[in-house]
Image 1 (cartoon, rainbow, N blue to C red):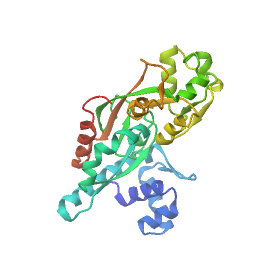
Image 2 (cartoon, rainbow, N blue to C red):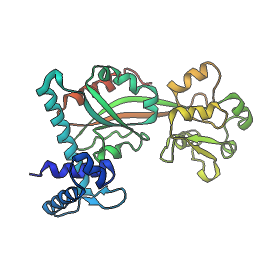
Image 3 (cartoon, rainbow, N blue to C red):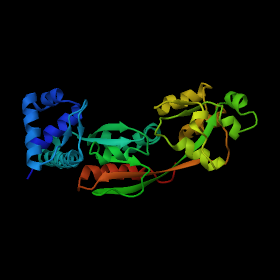
Length: 295
């Protein structure tokens, strides 16, 4: 059996991005942290850490990290049961895409937060890549576009979020006087969440049967859902916006739909550790329950 003190040292080094802060967190010396990691590697016969800056887990280290977090999650719930009403909330690290965070996520989990059952540590990334955080053991659950479930995890479908291609009327008049055309798309500045965001190109490919060459299409990268929309409202770019965010601006004519009848549907799924945790089951129920219908 692997000593949890050893896996705790590995987890602390990775969470704190270094040995000094890990030692402070654990209340031991840096030398003791190093000794625990060496002992762990000797027991396993394999390295668990790449001594880079910041340190990175090896493949073996990732397996240990996931294991340690799962055990820690169950132990925290055990203490909650033993201490009954005197216990504090359970801390949960989850990966959420920015658009979900800006639209429906908070409302979904609000009852669980207000009840005092959980404290959230939210990691934000694009919905196509949040699964990497779950795979690496950094979070207990993630919202992702991946349909197939991970080993050791439960997968629940949430629903479909439609994205609309929008701009201000002034921007549309300047850059798309003849509508959304292939030639205009190579010159009009677009806004994209980040370089991992595939929604924009997916939409163009569905509408035009190809993806415009990124080298020929000017793009702003704005990794914030709120600032993303602000960029569009400020006449700086056009972009793909979730319908719940876009609708109020379409209703007041501050934005126009550049391609009526065309959307980019994104299907979202909730992946969560299958470890028999009651608080994770409650969180799952809140998230799934928020999607009575597609947004």
